[in-house]
Length: 286
Image 1: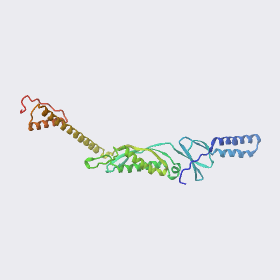
Image 2: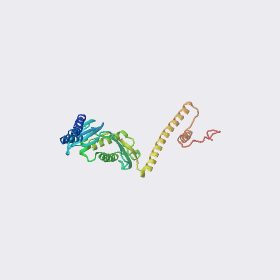
Image 3: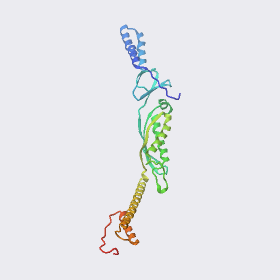
Image 4: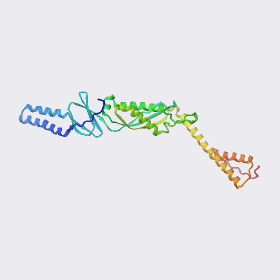
């Protein structure tokens, strides 16, 4: 048998009434009638008592009879089963697993620290009980293996200056990476009858030995991008200023004066510090 078998045992309350009748009735008969034969009634009541089974909500019991799988009880309630059954409890509740931070290499070979948050639960009690040695430990080990594989499939970030332009990265493509992680975990945990409810990256950062260098690189990239925008805006403003001066004929500028004006405006608009104005009290030639 390789599949789960769901069973519903006998009602426990009926057997509880029978247990009370046999056990206490037998004791009363022994005392009043002084007959040892009623000891069999007491013994039968004790045997029946070992068959009571209580299943709480979102829990299950896997039943074995001398090593043979009988079935699984998933419906909560009070039941009675064969007293010789071995009853193994398996929780069906959703469990949360936060993995340790692992040091792995991304697709470009950069060492990164990464961890995952996994929400899972047992779906197939037969597989969880018999196809793996310890299903909870199996979840932990396979999650770590899946995270290592995932990190090696994608780069941490895009680096256009080196020609590395990926559609999916660990840092920016959160949804795509989470979907890939869930798919990988579903394939790995299916053998243990585990259902993956959610999987996502819980922590992601460069490893300590390159974190400082990568931070400077990101800052430099941001500065270059900001400067690019500033220059674009400055050129547009200078062009607008020259057009307005020419259109309204405020001043007639030759090529040399236009070049000087453009140079001054670009310095003012693109400079890091505020410009110090100089008032020209003479002519344009001074």
